[in-house]
Length: 134
Image (spheres, rainbow, N blue to C red):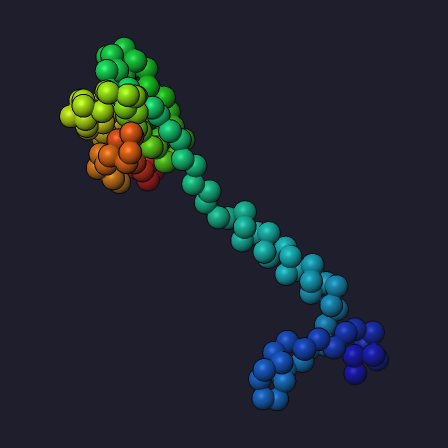
């Protein structure tokens, strides 16, 4: 029947009893499968992670400057990772770093949701903020 119609006989489900076959144009079938895969891939949401770095002694002007960048990143829909990096002996100011990050998260409350509270990992204290849904 497939030869008469000038099409291909394609085995769809070989494990079924009896095996399932279809008479179709195989090249067109492959093309449509690729197109469906591409369409599904284009609909996926790509999560972008932006980072902002502070020092434990970050001044108010620098804080405000970085806050503006954070607002821009969150409004674009990017995830934000803010961290305080402790160099050398500045690790003794862990409390300053934590206060700074909590203040930062509080300022960004209307733009994003705090996913992770301040957490010390080696020489970095990290918070992660997710953008709010529009």
